Length: 297
Length: 260
Image 1: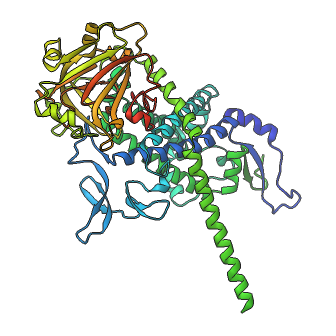
Image 2: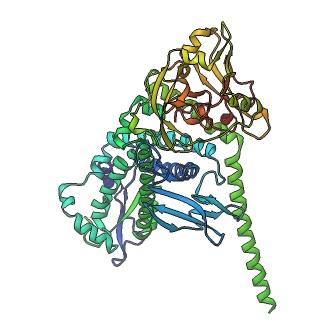
Image 3: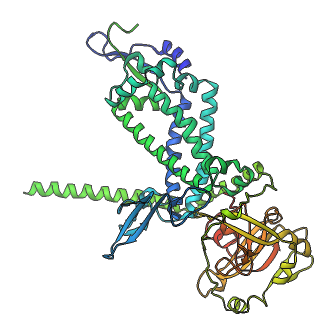
Protein backbone atom coordinates (compact mmCIF):
# COMPACT_ATOMS: atom_id res chain seq x y z
CA UNK A 1 0.00 0.00 0.00
CA UNK A 2 3.03 2.15 -0.16
CA UNK A 3 2.14 3.15 -3.69
CA UNK A 4 -1.16 4.57 -2.62
CA UNK A 5 0.41 5.71 0.62
CA UNK A 6 2.93 7.83 -1.29
CA UNK A 7 0.14 9.63 -3.07
CA UNK A 8 -1.76 10.04 0.13
CA UNK A 9 1.37 11.56 1.61
CA UNK A 10 0.97 14.52 -0.68
CA UNK A 11 -2.55 15.08 0.50
CA UNK A 12 -1.93 14.42 4.14
CA UNK A 13 1.46 16.02 4.24
CA UNK A 14 0.29 18.88 6.38
CA UNK A 15 2.77 19.97 9.00
CA UNK A 16 1.25 18.92 12.25
CA UNK A 17 3.99 19.55 14.76
CA UNK A 18 2.42 21.13 17.81
CA UNK A 19 4.31 24.40 17.61
CA UNK A 20 5.57 25.44 14.18
CA UNK A 21 6.89 28.83 15.08
CA UNK A 22 9.57 27.54 17.40
CA UNK A 23 12.35 26.24 15.20
CA UNK A 24 13.83 24.04 17.91
CA UNK A 25 10.69 21.90 18.22
CA UNK A 26 10.69 18.68 16.26
CA UNK A 27 9.00 19.04 12.90
CA UNK A 28 7.40 16.29 10.95
CA UNK A 29 4.34 14.91 9.32
CA UNK A 30 1.88 12.08 9.73
CA UNK A 31 2.04 9.57 6.92
CA UNK A 32 -0.55 6.96 6.11
CA UNK A 33 1.38 3.79 6.82
CA UNK A 34 -1.09 0.90 7.18
CA UNK A 35 -4.29 0.51 5.18
CA UNK A 36 -7.52 -0.44 6.92
CA UNK A 37 -7.21 -3.94 5.50
CA UNK A 38 -3.73 -4.49 6.93
CA UNK A 39 -4.81 -3.10 10.30
CA UNK A 40 -7.97 -5.22 10.43
CA UNK A 41 -6.33 -8.48 9.34
CA UNK A 42 -3.47 -7.81 11.77
CA UNK A 43 -5.71 -7.50 14.83
CA UNK A 44 -7.96 -10.35 13.75
CA UNK A 45 -4.80 -12.45 13.49
CA UNK A 46 -3.81 -11.52 17.03
CA UNK A 47 -7.08 -12.97 18.34
CA UNK A 48 -7.22 -16.02 16.06
CA UNK A 49 -3.59 -17.03 16.50
CA UNK A 50 -3.87 -16.74 20.28
CA UNK A 51 -6.87 -19.08 20.25
CA UNK A 52 -5.18 -21.45 17.81
CA UNK A 53 -2.00 -21.54 19.88
CA UNK A 54 -3.79 -22.22 23.16
CA UNK A 55 -6.17 -24.83 21.73
CA UNK A 56 -3.20 -26.38 19.90
CA UNK A 57 -1.37 -26.79 23.21
CA UNK A 58 -4.54 -28.40 24.61
CA UNK A 59 -4.48 -30.92 21.73
CA UNK A 60 -0.73 -31.51 22.21
CA UNK A 61 -1.39 -32.31 25.88
CA UNK A 62 -3.47 -35.36 24.86
CA UNK A 63 -0.26 -37.04 23.70
CA UNK A 64 2.65 -34.86 24.78
CA UNK A 65 5.33 -36.35 22.55
CA UNK A 66 6.64 -35.68 19.05
CA UNK A 67 8.23 -38.07 16.56
CA UNK A 68 9.87 -38.09 13.14
CA UNK A 69 8.50 -40.24 10.32
CA UNK A 70 5.11 -41.77 9.57
CA UNK A 71 4.51 -43.35 12.96
CA UNK A 72 5.14 -42.93 16.67
CA UNK A 73 8.25 -44.65 17.89
CA UNK A 74 7.04 -44.57 21.48
CA UNK A 75 10.38 -45.58 22.98
CA UNK A 76 12.33 -42.76 21.34
CA UNK A 77 10.37 -39.54 20.85
CA UNK A 78 12.07 -36.41 19.50
CA UNK A 79 10.43 -34.47 22.31
CA UNK A 80 8.33 -35.49 25.28
CA UNK A 81 6.89 -33.70 28.28
CA UNK A 82 5.97 -35.91 31.21
CA UNK A 83 5.56 -35.97 34.97
CA UNK A 84 7.90 -38.42 36.65
CA UNK A 85 8.19 -39.62 40.21
CA UNK A 86 11.67 -39.19 41.65
CA UNK A 87 13.28 -41.64 44.06
CA UNK A 88 12.27 -39.42 46.94
CA UNK A 89 8.62 -39.85 45.90
CA UNK A 90 8.10 -36.28 44.71
CA UNK A 91 6.77 -35.63 41.21
CA UNK A 92 8.78 -33.57 38.76
CA UNK A 93 7.94 -32.19 35.34
CA UNK A 94 10.48 -33.60 32.90
CA UNK A 95 10.96 -32.36 29.34
CA UNK A 96 13.08 -34.54 27.09
CA UNK A 97 14.49 -33.11 23.87
CA UNK A 98 16.52 -35.43 21.62
CA UNK A 99 17.50 -37.57 24.60
CA UNK A 100 18.44 -34.67 26.92
CA UNK A 101 16.33 -34.33 30.06
CA UNK A 102 15.39 -31.01 31.63
CA UNK A 103 13.56 -30.43 34.88
CA UNK A 104 10.71 -28.09 33.92
CA UNK A 105 8.57 -28.43 37.05
CA UNK A 106 6.11 -25.56 37.38
CA UNK A 107 6.05 -24.90 33.65
CA UNK A 108 6.02 -28.12 31.65
CA UNK A 109 5.00 -31.60 32.76
CA UNK A 110 3.87 -30.60 36.22
CA UNK A 111 2.21 -27.29 37.01
CA UNK A 112 -0.45 -25.68 39.17
CA UNK A 113 -4.01 -25.80 37.85
CA UNK A 114 -6.62 -23.05 38.34
CA UNK A 115 -7.28 -24.19 41.90
CA UNK A 116 -3.59 -24.11 42.77
CA UNK A 117 -3.11 -27.87 42.89
CA UNK A 118 -0.19 -29.53 41.16
CA UNK A 119 -1.38 -31.29 38.03
CA UNK A 120 0.48 -33.62 35.68
CA UNK A 121 -0.01 -32.01 32.30
CA UNK A 122 2.41 -31.06 29.54
CA UNK A 123 1.47 -27.39 29.07
CA UNK A 124 0.04 -25.58 32.11
CA UNK A 125 -3.63 -24.66 32.55
CA UNK A 126 -3.03 -20.94 31.88
CA UNK A 127 -1.59 -21.72 28.43
CA UNK A 128 -4.32 -24.02 27.13
CA UNK A 129 -7.85 -23.56 25.84
CA UNK A 130 -9.94 -24.67 27.63
CA UNK A 131 -7.87 -24.35 30.80
CA UNK A 132 -9.07 -27.78 31.95
CA UNK A 133 -8.00 -30.96 30.17
CA UNK A 134 -10.38 -31.60 27.25
CA UNK A 135 -9.13 -32.86 23.92
CA UNK A 136 -12.65 -32.78 22.43
CA UNK A 137 -13.14 -29.09 23.27
CA UNK A 138 -9.58 -28.20 22.25
CA UNK A 139 -10.32 -29.66 18.81
CA UNK A 140 -13.60 -27.75 18.57
CA UNK A 141 -11.82 -24.44 19.15
CA UNK A 142 -8.85 -25.30 16.96
CA UNK A 143 -10.80 -26.40 13.88
CA UNK A 144 -13.35 -23.58 14.10
CA UNK A 145 -10.70 -20.87 14.28
CA UNK A 146 -8.42 -22.62 11.79
CA UNK A 147 -11.07 -21.92 9.14
CA UNK A 148 -11.40 -18.28 10.18
CA UNK A 149 -7.61 -17.88 10.30
CA UNK A 150 -7.25 -19.27 6.76
CA UNK A 151 -10.06 -17.02 5.55
CA UNK A 152 -8.42 -13.96 7.13
CA UNK A 153 -5.07 -14.96 5.61
CA UNK A 154 -6.59 -15.39 2.16
CA UNK A 155 -8.25 -11.96 2.32
CA UNK A 156 -4.89 -10.43 3.29
CA UNK A 157 -2.99 -12.25 0.55
CA UNK A 158 -5.59 -11.60 -2.13
CA UNK A 159 -5.76 -7.86 -1.48
CA UNK A 160 -2.04 -7.71 -0.78
CA UNK A 161 -1.41 -9.12 -4.24
CA UNK A 162 -4.09 -7.03 -5.94
CA UNK A 163 -2.93 -3.68 -4.60
CA UNK A 164 0.72 -4.73 -4.76
CA UNK A 165 1.25 -4.25 -0.99
CA UNK A 166 3.35 -7.42 -0.90
CA UNK A 167 5.39 -6.38 -3.91
CA UNK A 168 5.90 -2.70 -3.13
CA UNK A 169 6.25 -2.78 0.64
CA UNK A 170 7.70 -6.17 1.37
CA UNK A 171 9.94 -7.34 -1.47
CA UNK A 172 13.32 -5.70 -0.82
CA UNK A 173 15.23 -4.06 -3.66
CA UNK A 174 18.68 -5.26 -4.65
CA UNK A 175 20.14 -2.16 -3.07
CA UNK A 176 18.33 -2.85 0.19
CA UNK A 177 19.55 -6.43 0.17
CA UNK A 178 23.12 -5.18 -0.15
CA UNK A 179 22.57 -3.12 2.96
CA UNK A 180 21.32 -6.04 5.01
CA UNK A 181 24.52 -6.33 7.03
CA UNK A 182 24.35 -2.70 8.11
CA UNK A 183 20.65 -3.02 8.87
CA UNK A 184 21.26 -6.10 11.03
CA UNK A 185 24.06 -4.27 12.89
CA UNK A 186 21.71 -1.30 13.46
CA UNK A 187 19.02 -3.64 14.80
CA UNK A 188 21.48 -5.24 17.20
CA UNK A 189 22.40 -1.81 18.53
CA UNK A 190 18.67 -1.00 18.66
CA UNK A 191 19.09 1.91 16.26
CA UNK A 192 16.14 2.41 14.00
CA UNK A 193 15.68 4.39 10.80
CA UNK A 194 14.37 7.93 11.09
CA UNK A 195 13.09 10.53 8.66
CA UNK A 196 12.48 9.48 5.06
CA UNK A 197 13.92 5.99 5.71
CA UNK A 198 11.26 5.34 8.34
CA UNK A 199 8.44 5.82 5.85
CA UNK A 200 8.92 2.26 4.62
CA UNK A 201 9.77 -1.09 6.15
CA UNK A 202 13.52 -1.65 6.48
CA UNK A 203 15.13 -4.66 4.81
CA UNK A 204 15.07 -6.86 7.93
CA UNK A 205 11.40 -6.06 8.46
CA UNK A 206 10.61 -6.78 4.83
CA UNK A 207 12.32 -10.15 4.90
CA UNK A 208 10.79 -11.18 8.25
CA UNK A 209 7.27 -10.32 7.14
CA UNK A 210 7.75 -12.02 3.77
CA UNK A 211 9.03 -15.22 5.36
CA UNK A 212 6.22 -15.12 7.92
CA UNK A 213 3.44 -14.58 5.39
CA UNK A 214 4.70 -16.70 2.51
CA UNK A 215 6.67 -19.45 4.24
CA UNK A 216 6.00 -19.98 7.93
CA UNK A 217 2.21 -19.58 8.03
CA UNK A 218 1.61 -21.67 4.88
CA UNK A 219 3.84 -24.44 6.31
CA UNK A 220 1.86 -24.28 9.55
CA UNK A 221 -1.43 -24.71 7.67
CA UNK A 222 -0.16 -27.43 5.32
CA UNK A 223 1.41 -29.44 8.14
CA UNK A 224 -1.92 -29.19 9.96
CA UNK A 225 -3.77 -30.48 6.91
CA UNK A 226 -1.25 -33.33 6.55
CA UNK A 227 -2.49 -34.70 9.88
CA UNK A 228 -5.97 -35.30 8.42
CA UNK A 229 -6.33 -38.96 7.38
CA UNK A 230 -9.01 -38.06 4.81
CA UNK A 231 -6.82 -35.44 3.13
CA UNK A 232 -3.84 -37.80 3.25
CA UNK A 233 -5.90 -40.27 1.23
CA UNK A 234 -6.86 -37.59 -1.30
CA UNK A 235 -3.35 -36.07 -1.57
CA UNK A 236 -0.60 -38.42 -0.40
CA UNK A 237 1.84 -35.66 -1.47
CA UNK A 238 1.02 -34.03 1.87
CA UNK A 239 2.70 -36.97 3.59
CA UNK A 240 5.58 -37.00 1.13
CA UNK A 241 6.51 -33.33 1.49
CA UNK A 242 6.62 -33.51 5.29
CA UNK A 243 8.13 -37.00 5.49
CA UNK A 244 5.18 -38.71 7.17
CA UNK A 245 2.27 -37.87 9.43
CA UNK A 246 4.24 -37.74 12.67
CA UNK A 247 6.86 -35.51 11.02
CA UNK A 248 4.02 -33.24 9.90
CA UNK A 249 2.80 -33.06 13.51
CA UNK A 250 6.33 -32.23 14.71
CA UNK A 251 6.80 -29.59 11.99
CA UNK A 252 3.39 -28.10 12.88
CA UNK A 253 4.63 -27.77 16.46
CA UNK A 254 8.01 -26.30 15.44
CA UNK A 255 6.37 -23.79 13.07
CA UNK A 256 4.01 -22.73 15.86
CA UNK A 257 7.01 -22.32 18.18
CA UNK A 258 8.75 -20.15 15.58
CA UNK A 259 5.61 -18.06 15.31
CA UNK A 260 5.71 -17.52 19.07
CA UNK A 261 9.36 -16.45 18.79
CA UNK A 262 8.42 -14.09 15.95
CA UNK A 263 5.68 -12.52 18.10
CA UNK A 264 8.07 -12.05 21.04
CA UNK A 265 10.66 -10.30 18.84
CA UNK A 266 7.94 -8.32 17.05
CA UNK A 267 6.41 -7.04 20.29
CA UNK A 268 9.87 -6.23 21.67
CA UNK A 269 10.66 -4.19 18.56
CA UNK A 270 7.32 -2.39 18.77
CA UNK A 271 8.04 -1.48 22.38
CA UNK A 272 11.55 -0.09 21.87
CA UNK A 273 11.17 1.67 18.52
CA UNK A 274 8.56 4.21 19.55
CA UNK A 275 5.67 2.33 21.05
CA UNK A 276 3.02 5.09 20.81
CA UNK A 277 3.81 5.95 17.23
CA UNK A 278 3.81 2.24 16.32
CA UNK A 279 0.54 1.60 18.10
CA UNK A 280 -1.09 4.61 16.49
CA UNK A 281 -0.05 3.43 13.06
CA UNK A 282 -1.43 -0.10 13.47
CA UNK A 283 -4.68 1.23 14.96
CA UNK A 284 -5.35 4.42 12.96
CA UNK A 285 -2.91 3.92 10.11
CA UNK A 286 -1.07 7.23 10.76
CA UNK A 287 2.65 7.20 11.53
CA UNK A 288 4.62 10.24 12.63
CA UNK A 289 7.75 10.97 10.65
CA UNK A 290 10.14 13.39 12.26
CA UNK A 291 12.04 15.72 9.98
CA UNK A 292 14.79 18.05 11.01
CA UNK A 293 14.20 21.72 10.22
CA UNK A 294 15.28 22.55 6.70
CA UNK A 295 15.25 18.97 5.47
CA UNK A 296 11.49 18.84 5.16
CA UNK A 297 11.04 19.31 1.44
CA UNK B 1 0.15 4.68 63.43
CA UNK B 2 -3.49 5.11 62.63
CA UNK B 3 -2.65 6.53 59.23
CA UNK B 4 -0.44 3.57 58.41
CA UNK B 5 -3.25 1.25 59.34
CA UNK B 6 -5.53 3.01 56.91
CA UNK B 7 -2.97 2.73 54.16
CA UNK B 8 -2.35 -0.94 54.90
CA UNK B 9 -6.06 -1.62 54.93
CA UNK B 10 -6.50 0.30 51.72
CA UNK B 11 -3.66 -1.61 50.14
CA UNK B 12 -5.19 -4.85 51.32
CA UNK B 13 -8.57 -3.89 49.90
CA UNK B 14 -7.01 -2.97 46.56
CA UNK B 15 -5.13 -6.25 46.49
CA UNK B 16 -8.32 -8.18 47.33
CA UNK B 17 -10.22 -6.36 44.59
CA UNK B 18 -7.45 -7.22 42.13
CA UNK B 19 -7.55 -10.89 43.05
CA UNK B 20 -11.35 -10.95 42.89
CA UNK B 21 -11.26 -9.21 39.53
CA UNK B 22 -8.77 -11.69 38.18
CA UNK B 23 -10.80 -14.62 39.53
CA UNK B 24 -14.00 -13.19 38.06
CA UNK B 25 -12.36 -12.69 34.71
CA UNK B 26 -10.94 -16.20 34.74
CA UNK B 27 -14.23 -17.60 35.97
CA UNK B 28 -16.15 -15.64 33.35
CA UNK B 29 -13.78 -16.88 30.71
CA UNK B 30 -14.18 -20.48 31.85
CA UNK B 31 -17.94 -20.07 31.89
CA UNK B 32 -17.88 -18.71 28.35
CA UNK B 33 -15.59 -21.52 27.19
CA UNK B 34 -17.61 -24.26 28.90
CA UNK B 35 -20.94 -22.84 27.69
CA UNK B 36 -23.15 -25.17 25.60
CA UNK B 37 -24.05 -22.40 23.14
CA UNK B 38 -20.35 -21.67 22.60
CA UNK B 39 -19.71 -25.36 21.94
CA UNK B 40 -22.66 -25.58 19.53
CA UNK B 41 -21.30 -22.62 17.54
CA UNK B 42 -17.81 -24.13 17.45
CA UNK B 43 -19.24 -27.52 16.43
CA UNK B 44 -20.83 -25.96 13.36
CA UNK B 45 -17.35 -25.98 11.82
CA UNK B 46 -17.39 -29.80 12.01
CA UNK B 47 -20.17 -30.13 9.42
CA UNK B 48 -18.46 -27.54 7.25
CA UNK B 49 -15.13 -29.39 7.49
CA UNK B 50 -16.81 -32.69 6.59
CA UNK B 51 -18.51 -31.12 3.59
CA UNK B 52 -15.34 -29.44 2.32
CA UNK B 53 -13.22 -32.57 2.83
CA UNK B 54 -15.74 -34.64 0.86
CA UNK B 55 -15.76 -31.98 -1.82
CA UNK B 56 -11.99 -31.84 -2.28
CA UNK B 57 -11.25 -35.56 -1.88
CA UNK B 58 -12.73 -38.18 -4.21
CA UNK B 59 -15.15 -40.57 -2.49
CA UNK B 60 -13.11 -43.55 -3.61
CA UNK B 61 -9.63 -42.17 -2.80
CA UNK B 62 -7.64 -44.81 -0.92
CA UNK B 63 -5.66 -44.26 2.24
CA UNK B 64 -1.94 -44.82 1.68
CA UNK B 65 -0.93 -48.47 1.98
CA UNK B 66 2.49 -49.39 3.34
CA UNK B 67 4.83 -52.37 3.18
CA UNK B 68 5.74 -55.09 5.70
CA UNK B 69 8.92 -53.22 6.63
CA UNK B 70 6.83 -50.25 7.79
CA UNK B 71 4.89 -52.28 10.41
CA UNK B 72 5.07 -50.72 13.88
CA UNK B 73 6.92 -52.99 16.33
CA UNK B 74 4.49 -51.89 19.02
CA UNK B 75 0.90 -51.19 17.96
CA UNK B 76 -0.49 -49.21 20.86
CA UNK B 77 -3.70 -50.41 22.50
CA UNK B 78 -6.17 -47.72 23.44
CA UNK B 79 -9.57 -47.81 25.12
CA UNK B 80 -10.65 -51.26 26.31
CA UNK B 81 -7.89 -53.83 26.77
CA UNK B 82 -10.17 -56.75 27.79
CA UNK B 83 -13.97 -56.33 27.80
CA UNK B 84 -15.46 -56.57 31.28
CA UNK B 85 -18.49 -58.55 30.12
CA UNK B 86 -19.52 -62.10 31.13
CA UNK B 87 -20.92 -63.12 27.78
CA UNK B 88 -17.83 -61.85 25.97
CA UNK B 89 -15.51 -63.67 28.34
CA UNK B 90 -17.44 -66.93 27.85
CA UNK B 91 -17.13 -66.57 24.10
CA UNK B 92 -13.45 -65.70 24.22
CA UNK B 93 -12.81 -68.74 26.48
CA UNK B 94 -14.19 -70.92 23.67
CA UNK B 95 -12.03 -69.17 21.09
CA UNK B 96 -15.13 -67.39 19.74
CA UNK B 97 -16.41 -70.71 18.30
CA UNK B 98 -19.97 -69.80 19.38
CA UNK B 99 -19.65 -66.14 18.50
CA UNK B 100 -21.60 -64.75 15.59
CA UNK B 101 -22.06 -61.33 14.09
CA UNK B 102 -25.67 -60.24 14.10
CA UNK B 103 -26.64 -58.07 11.12
CA UNK B 104 -30.04 -56.45 11.18
CA UNK B 105 -32.01 -53.23 11.13
CA UNK B 106 -33.01 -51.79 7.78
CA UNK B 107 -31.86 -54.79 5.72
CA UNK B 108 -33.82 -57.13 3.46
CA UNK B 109 -32.50 -60.41 4.94
CA UNK B 110 -31.24 -60.13 8.54
CA UNK B 111 -28.53 -62.72 9.12
CA UNK B 112 -25.92 -64.08 11.50
CA UNK B 113 -22.33 -64.73 10.42
CA UNK B 114 -19.97 -67.00 12.33
CA UNK B 115 -16.22 -66.29 12.17
CA UNK B 116 -15.93 -69.18 9.70
CA UNK B 117 -18.68 -67.62 7.55
CA UNK B 118 -16.85 -64.30 7.50
CA UNK B 119 -13.52 -65.94 6.68
CA UNK B 120 -15.19 -67.75 3.76
CA UNK B 121 -16.26 -64.45 2.20
CA UNK B 122 -13.93 -62.51 -0.16
CA UNK B 123 -11.24 -60.77 1.89
CA UNK B 124 -9.02 -57.73 1.66
CA UNK B 125 -5.58 -57.32 3.23
CA UNK B 126 -4.16 -53.85 3.80
CA UNK B 127 -1.18 -52.34 5.61
CA UNK B 128 -2.37 -48.97 6.82
CA UNK B 129 -1.62 -46.22 9.29
CA UNK B 130 -3.84 -45.90 12.34
CA UNK B 131 -4.17 -42.31 13.58
CA UNK B 132 -5.41 -41.83 17.12
CA UNK B 133 -7.31 -38.66 17.97
CA UNK B 134 -4.71 -38.15 20.72
CA UNK B 135 -2.06 -37.59 18.07
CA UNK B 136 -0.04 -40.78 17.72
CA UNK B 137 0.12 -43.15 14.72
CA UNK B 138 0.95 -46.85 14.23
CA UNK B 139 1.10 -49.02 11.13
CA UNK B 140 -0.55 -52.46 11.13
CA UNK B 141 -1.55 -55.16 8.68
CA UNK B 142 -5.24 -56.00 8.60
CA UNK B 143 -7.15 -58.79 6.91
CA UNK B 144 -10.91 -58.90 6.84
CA UNK B 145 -14.08 -58.89 4.84
CA UNK B 146 -15.08 -55.62 3.18
CA UNK B 147 -18.24 -54.23 4.75
CA UNK B 148 -19.63 -53.90 1.22
CA UNK B 149 -19.43 -57.71 0.78
CA UNK B 150 -21.45 -58.34 3.93
CA UNK B 151 -23.95 -55.63 3.06
CA UNK B 152 -24.44 -57.15 -0.38
CA UNK B 153 -25.49 -60.43 1.23
CA UNK B 154 -28.15 -58.95 3.48
CA UNK B 155 -29.38 -56.23 1.11
CA UNK B 156 -29.98 -52.66 2.30
CA UNK B 157 -33.44 -51.15 2.47
CA UNK B 158 -33.61 -47.79 0.64
CA UNK B 159 -34.09 -45.87 3.90
CA UNK B 160 -30.83 -47.13 5.43
CA UNK B 161 -28.34 -44.26 5.84
CA UNK B 162 -25.92 -45.36 8.54
CA UNK B 163 -24.39 -48.51 9.94
CA UNK B 164 -24.36 -48.79 13.71
CA UNK B 165 -21.74 -50.98 15.41
CA UNK B 166 -22.60 -52.34 18.85
CA UNK B 167 -19.68 -53.62 20.89
CA UNK B 168 -19.12 -55.94 23.85
CA UNK B 169 -17.04 -53.63 26.02
CA UNK B 170 -18.61 -51.49 28.75
CA UNK B 171 -16.64 -48.25 29.13
CA UNK B 172 -17.72 -47.90 32.77
CA UNK B 173 -17.15 -50.93 34.99
CA UNK B 174 -20.32 -53.02 35.40
CA UNK B 175 -22.52 -50.69 33.36
CA UNK B 176 -23.94 -52.43 30.25
CA UNK B 177 -25.49 -49.10 29.24
CA UNK B 178 -21.97 -47.75 28.67
CA UNK B 179 -20.99 -50.31 26.03
CA UNK B 180 -18.95 -48.87 23.17
CA UNK B 181 -20.76 -48.13 19.95
CA UNK B 182 -20.04 -46.31 16.72
CA UNK B 183 -21.66 -45.36 13.44
CA UNK B 184 -20.53 -44.52 9.92
CA UNK B 185 -22.30 -43.22 6.83
CA UNK B 186 -22.98 -45.47 3.84
CA UNK B 187 -20.35 -43.69 1.71
CA UNK B 188 -17.68 -44.68 4.22
CA UNK B 189 -19.21 -48.13 4.80
CA UNK B 190 -19.03 -49.04 1.10
CA UNK B 191 -15.46 -47.69 0.65
CA UNK B 192 -13.14 -50.51 -0.51
CA UNK B 193 -10.80 -50.16 2.48
CA UNK B 194 -13.61 -50.30 5.04
CA UNK B 195 -13.33 -53.84 6.34
CA UNK B 196 -14.37 -56.00 9.27
CA UNK B 197 -10.92 -57.23 10.32
CA UNK B 198 -10.38 -60.65 11.92
CA UNK B 199 -6.59 -60.86 11.41
CA UNK B 200 -3.90 -58.43 12.48
CA UNK B 201 -0.25 -58.76 11.43
CA UNK B 202 -0.95 -62.27 10.00
CA UNK B 203 -2.42 -63.59 13.26
CA UNK B 204 -5.99 -63.87 14.53
CA UNK B 205 -6.93 -60.52 16.05
CA UNK B 206 -5.98 -60.53 19.75
CA UNK B 207 -8.22 -59.31 22.55
CA UNK B 208 -6.49 -55.96 23.24
CA UNK B 209 -6.89 -55.03 19.56
CA UNK B 210 -10.56 -56.04 19.35
CA UNK B 211 -11.06 -59.82 18.94
CA UNK B 212 -12.87 -61.41 17.31
CA UNK B 213 -13.86 -58.62 14.91
CA UNK B 214 -13.13 -54.91 14.58
CA UNK B 215 -13.89 -52.21 12.09
CA UNK B 216 -11.25 -50.50 9.94
CA UNK B 217 -12.21 -47.08 8.52
CA UNK B 218 -8.88 -45.99 7.11
CA UNK B 219 -9.69 -42.37 6.29
CA UNK B 220 -10.87 -41.50 9.77
CA UNK B 221 -9.42 -41.49 13.29
CA UNK B 222 -9.07 -44.51 15.55
CA UNK B 223 -12.16 -44.00 17.68
CA UNK B 224 -14.39 -44.68 14.65
CA UNK B 225 -12.92 -48.19 14.38
CA UNK B 226 -15.08 -50.10 16.84
CA UNK B 227 -13.52 -53.17 18.47
CA UNK B 228 -15.33 -56.29 19.86
CA UNK B 229 -18.23 -55.92 17.39
CA UNK B 230 -21.30 -58.00 18.30
CA UNK B 231 -24.03 -56.53 16.16
CA UNK B 232 -24.34 -54.28 13.12
CA UNK B 233 -27.54 -52.46 12.39
CA UNK B 234 -28.53 -50.41 9.35
CA UNK B 235 -30.49 -47.35 10.49
CA UNK B 236 -32.01 -44.20 9.09
CA UNK B 237 -30.92 -42.07 12.05
CA UNK B 238 -28.93 -42.56 15.24
CA UNK B 239 -30.47 -39.59 17.02
CA UNK B 240 -32.58 -41.72 19.36
CA UNK B 241 -29.81 -44.03 20.57
CA UNK B 242 -28.14 -43.06 23.89
CA UNK B 243 -26.66 -39.57 23.62
CA UNK B 244 -27.89 -39.32 20.04
CA UNK B 245 -24.49 -38.33 18.63
CA UNK B 246 -23.75 -41.66 16.95
CA UNK B 247 -20.93 -42.99 19.09
CA UNK B 248 -19.53 -43.41 22.59
CA UNK B 249 -16.93 -40.64 22.22
CA UNK B 250 -19.28 -38.53 20.10
CA UNK B 251 -21.73 -38.48 23.03
CA UNK B 252 -18.84 -37.10 25.10
CA UNK B 253 -18.17 -34.22 22.71
CA UNK B 254 -15.95 -35.65 19.98
CA UNK B 255 -16.81 -35.05 16.34
CA UNK B 256 -18.88 -37.68 14.50
CA UNK B 257 -16.89 -37.00 11.36
CA UNK B 258 -13.32 -37.92 12.24
CA UNK B 259 -11.53 -37.34 8.94
CA UNK B 260 -9.45 -34.60 10.55
